[in-house]
Image (cartoon, rainbow, N blue to C red):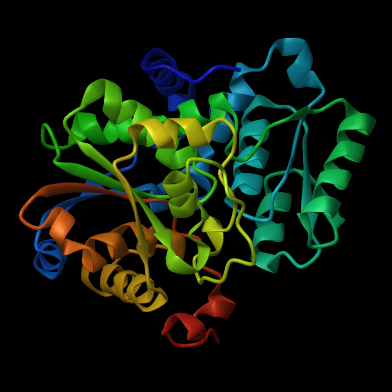
Length: 322
């Protein structure tokens, strides 16, 4: 499959509109003062399933042909993509099969099951996940929808940036999106390259999981090896579809310290009064850690999601769950 075009991102907007939210673009004077810039926050924490993943999964599911769709869709995921695919499948009325590590947080398992997917548990390693997926596909004939390395998914994720450009000032000087596997950042880069080419596209990544930064520096995909970060949505390596897009269109990857991620998340929770997850906070953390790139400029920031495990609140600097 080839790299998605802006036409395909626009078509994805129309395709997913009945099934997803157009999320707000918010501002906050207190965070402007903290970062020394004018920020515009695209709040995908208000998206269905609580994350931008609903966009790409929905676009991919509704692009399937009628006969292929009847056999259902499948993926392996322990995070937001699992819930997103399950919801998209339910919206189209087709089966969903999700291979999840047996160690997945209970709240995520319950969300996937609540959207009607059949869950197959596996050991918590990539080999077991891929083996489980292969068995599911062989048994059901379901179509595999990759969490990020799929042009249909990338086009869907690009719809968040397209909305941001439509709703924000013209043009923004820079836009920051977090990067794990690169689906969101790739879609963002493609949308801005076509619709707002003067805007610098910046990726944000934890220093403890900096494979995207290293990959762009070395000019080849370097795997994520034993990543250590509170931003658990950003642990995956770049893919063969996302890497060339990022290499061509992303100005820079900013890596951020763990304490800056937690500080950014606490600022958003306490000043904006909205809940974001650590992976989403990484984007604003980049602005706090590298003010030289953003000071006195208009900056778009994509909050990728708001799914926080209550059991992990103490390690994030918040009070524990009851």
